[in-house]
Amino acid sequence: MGSIPIVSAVSQIYGCDNEINEKRYQEFMNKFKSLYNQDPEFIVRAPGRVNIIGEHIDYCGMPVLPMAIEPDILVAVTRRNDNTIQVNNENSGAYKPFTFTHTQGETVEIDTSNHFWGNYFKCGYRGAYEATNEPAVRGMNCLLGGNLPTGSGLSSSSALVCCSAMTFSLVNDTKLTQSEIVECAVKAERYVGVNGGGMDQTCSIMAKNSSALFIEFHPKTAVTDVKFPKTDPQIAFVIANTLVTSNKKDTAPVCYNLRVVETRIAALMLAKHLQIQDFMNIANPLTMKIVMDMHLNEDAEIKQCGETEVWCRKLGKMVDISKAFFGKNQGGFTWEQCAEYLGMTVEELKIKVQTDRFPVIAESLQLYNRTLHVYSEALRVVKFRQICENGGDNNGPTIQRLGELMNESQESCDGLFNCSCEELNTLCGIARYVVNDC
Image (cartoon, rainbow, N blue to C red):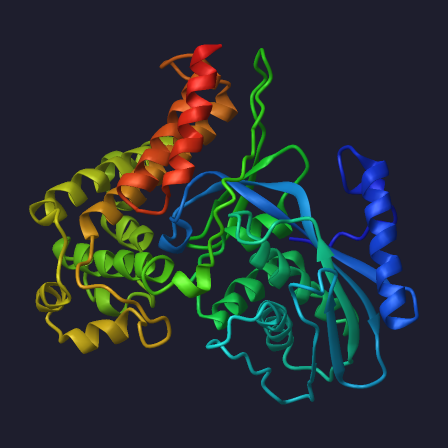
């Protein structure tokens, strides 16, 4: 991928509402000047994203299909002549300013016990610093702002990490490429204590106007633009907010990080069940995508298929295998059961799936539900892309088929992955009722 895009006018960024955005940027720059008594040298922007389909499968190595949105995180910047980094927030009432100094060779410390918004800025800064062989650094004055709501599922935290990484690169002239920004931002956000995948950062940095992205993560990150098919009426996406906030960091031990751990354990157990050689040492972490590829890449029948059919056949087979293997224990597995099957102690298993870095709290591990969601959701992603690129399929009108896949995705998120909530289920029900009533 190329270098970070640089534009000279707000109109080059947004599809519409240029007057509103120009006013927003001017007010943002005025705020910066009132704080630092000088104009910003530049403004760094990273958009939020919505994930159309492919929920909670990026950290399993599976493909996803998000798209960027216009609401964004902004960072206005000037360089300093010392090694002090001063950061203010446009919403100073809710987000207190902070300052830190950084000398070449030092590690930027991040206190994960303190849920402080500045940790995300420090993550991006530290990631970019480490990705560029720890160069001599310059200080900077920063103002953070934007119109992307926090805790609303639009990846405001990842957008902030991306902004911070780009800011470091520009201030210190390290010339990180888009793909390098993505890579360092994905790794760096884990310093906060959330064991995430790479979808949010990839979409924020790589997205194109009027396109979704088909993002693959294994064997390497690859991005394909996906245009929506022409339909009558035209496809439109309604982005609604339940107003329920999700603090991913605070709930991680019983929600986000736990789901990651469950999929990691499921991958290990599947690998043993499928008699994959030396599966404990193939990769760290071993993901469900790697297990699928190791088991089916040499399948003679599948190898004769085209790209999309390869995906569909492999994922379909893994759904069946997962049902048969984990289905005997749909109520959940204990840590002891998983460890015994893998021939290790519980403590060894916990270290293997990195609960020392990303703590979790659980007595029962829902491996059947998680595995079934991951493989079936990835299959829906592939089908969604196929319909978009082919302009439909043989199972009904294009919009209806895309909607059916999204409905199935939400039902799986709720019933199998437990990553929905009552308010979101109600909102989806209202939307379906309105459509059916038209």
